[in-house]
Image (cartoon, rainbow, N blue to C red; front, side, top):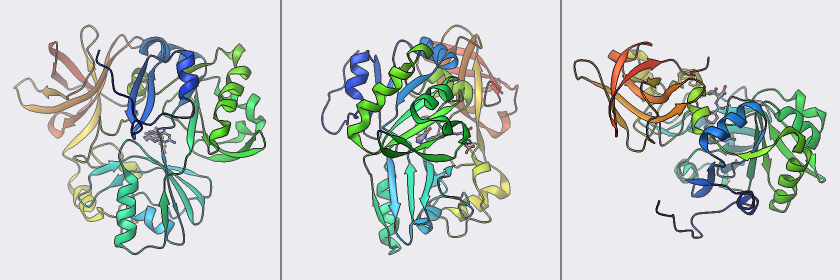
Length: 369
Ligand code: THG
């Protein structure tokens, strides 16, 4: 395959040298930064993730820091999720939408102090939107992208590995909560979160000088746990129903279409950009919905341009945007947007893959409920 040209714009991370020494096989580009996606093979990485523990370089989950007297006002303007009861060190999965209700990003927001937030972004330039809003509204805030480089620890042995490096307090961290823990004398924010459903933590490392020491400490402590490097895994994330911004949803989709209605408090979110559009949509319900799709036959090729979904009568039924063979489910699993008339679980459809038409069935997300 053709190679990507490396330059300053395609940012490396403080862990890149370690990854390459260990033999990473594939990257994608996310927030203008390298994100490892294949270590051994997507299938082998998935099987290992479900059994053991992995260390993921997810530095590309960049933090947009918003601080100042109007910080909370600005973050609340950006999302229909009600943040008024947010506690300090709590994480929130928030849809960020534009004035039409279109998805701009689906980050994790962390309230670090009454006047300080991190927005842990998916792949779009949220900082520019935030700066534009702050300028337009004359908010008293500062916005930048601090050099935070997250390591995610994922898999069933995550608690064990984290306790060995950070102490027994890690067990007390609840899902989407965080604690400040010490490593080499420095306080680091650690949350129980991450882009898999195998359990785990995210370590928000601020001091780049500690990147390799932290990496090395995790691998030394986890040798008998069969710790390996990993990364967001296509099979695991589709089975688990974790959405990928830019792939499964874009600015063309509303949070309701993305199944993120449970993270929208439209009534409470007065002043949120796009609120009127969401109120209109809440009345009639969405026109399409994100769904799991099981695709029959042998392993499908990778999905780049969306694959058309059609019904038996040839009607447009939507599109598939992520697809892969699942060894555990012994079928192809996929995520797609399905039009209203066809989104019932169990609905039979046709999908146009690059290899030809296949039979497909609408499935609930996650696949593994
Ligand atoms: N962690 C952090 N930042 C991130 C991601 C992450 N930024 C980019 C990307 N991932 C953002 N997208 C998601 C998507 C799903 C979840 C988190 C970030 C997620 N969802 C759970 C779910 O859907 O079941 C839980 C949501 C909830 O209950 O609040 O975890 O992974 N730091």
